[in-house]
Length: 306
Image (tube, rainbow, N blue to C red; front, side):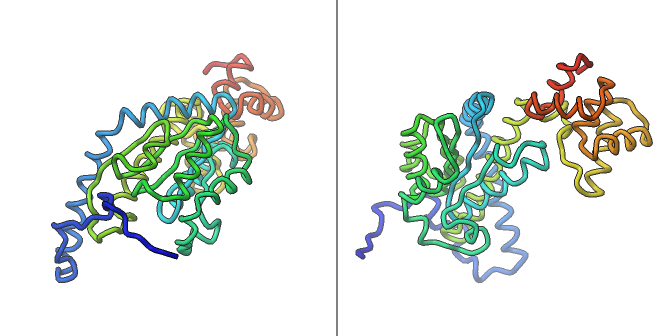
């Protein structure tokens, strides 16, 4: 197979003149330089907030219509998508299907590099078809360089179905930005270690994904004020947090809140609906099922205060 160098390197692959002598620096100098470079990331993300806002609006619209949110990528980008998706159910109490992460190379690529998989543009379509991806869903393609064939293939396929597509990349005017409906491009510049996009580019991508999922699920009603009213209390730390949320949301004292949580089978959503409406657990579960797990809607349906 003939190998050809690209005509021009994306900014994520270019050398950083500030770190050209990195290997000769002391540990103190290395970490200080890395910190200085990292300070550029937040400012880069701030410049693309209008695009983040536009993406969230599109995602919210699709999810309100029973769509799902998919992240897809390779390497670090794919792992970041899986990380964000995996944290949505425990944080917001949503189903495992609502936000999904897809990575080139499958599960093994989560912990071991499977680099060759990123060159297969057709594999992305097969991976999405396996998940039952349809036009009502959303695809966020994550690619630091913006030129990964697998991720571009995924976004192209999703767009051909009529799905809402978003690109998250750190390379302006890259191929993926030309196939996505909305492109979010925080330009963080060359990496401290040339081409190691798990560093600044990865951090910028993680910040953007945090915004996409959090703002979307807040607008869909899975947060009360700034409280995780839908969290899943599956360990002692989370049960204690759930009790505190119940106390704040209902004015119950600690013992009463703990008792309400037990009555709700350690599900804060059930406990909140029961406490605010006076219904039993079965009625609370039914109302939550009919409201897609959104607490304030379930309470409203049962005639309680929201």
